[in-house]
Length: 215
Ligand code: SF4
Image 1: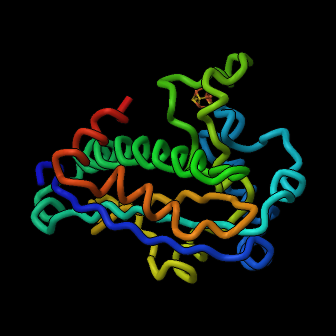
Image 2: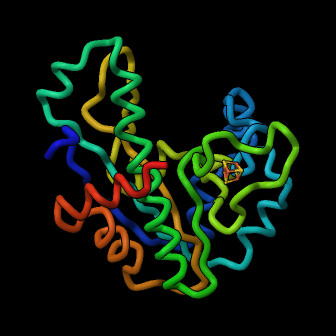
């Protein structure tokens, strides 16, 4: 594969009430949000100006989906420290865009559902929020899981068996993106089917999808 990494998908559906009880700690995680550059700078991020309890209240189930970008060993070994940021962004941005679009498609297949995204919105090159203008793409923008005060490390470790890795001056073995679909009823695997279809088809089609979504 030309990108130097392989994609791996892990999906789990569970009850939303248990999920909230186990993994939401707004006080703790919104403190981290306040220290992030996206705080108040993206419409997807805190402060969101919505009642999060009310937002979650129509839903009874959640499907959590993680896409790992697992680097080939030679890529990890041969990427010098001064290229780690460039390689990281070149990996994550197109996968994040394709994953976001796949989750929007899953949302369309599950009536009454809504997606929560991974980190701050990157649909536009420059978000309108700092200038005070409305979101340019409200039909495609989705709030981030982080902004609800969810503990993403615990979710990935407990529910999906994945340890989150970060770059610490060196390319990690993999990066992980986590999205979720909030649902009124169990979906019978729609998220897994749609994300596999769009990100894991043939290598050629996958690369086309990644390029198409890399805006
Ligand atoms: S869609 Fe554009 S304007 Fe809206 S939150 Fe995302 S980056 Fe900002």
